[in-house]
Image (cartoon, rainbow, N blue to C red; front, side, top):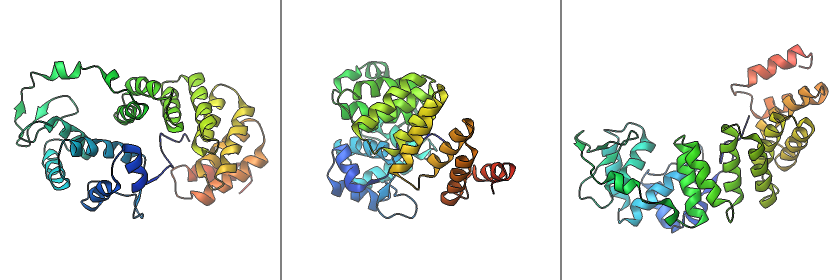
Length: 285
């Protein structure tokens, strides 16, 4: 199981504010208004996906939109674009306009009434060169949005601009995109670069182990996955992946140990029943 960009990593509202260059009281106001939702069962921790939401909210806020105005406009946007995330992103088309409009995922510009808007300036706006956004943080934000939208090639371009002076997360996310595009050797390099910047980056060790297995480096896969568990002993996905890697090299005794650990930490996942069958088949239940 590959750790997706930002999965397993959570953020406080203070960390989101710092990452996006915002006052923390602004982020907290969005939480209070229901514009930004914490993780289930948590008061003030947020998933990596929230970074993209905060980026969009920040653009609206910097354009002078208050939290109540954003909330009202978002509710209107969802009457024509059902997906909440797409509706919020689509609101960026309203900046500089006197009325609310939303850019649909297919590129159409729509008013909440359902009326189409002729967007004569769209081609010129879309042609504006992205290199004007020069900071690694800006490129990282563009990559996050592109990756979330499934535009992996665009995400790769953005992350490649971000990594020369960027964070471990930029290397990690670029590695994930390379992996999805089956550029496994490039993915190995990026996960290794993430680890060089943050040696205790458990998710990067986990994904490095997976991709090493993909390129036939079985010993390296076991080493990387073992390192992930040294950093985070309760990392369920790493236990599963290490068990699979050990089974491939024929070390079933150690594999069973990590399959059992996986069931301890994640007993109700969609993989749990498969693991139970493996243990029964191998006589290790």
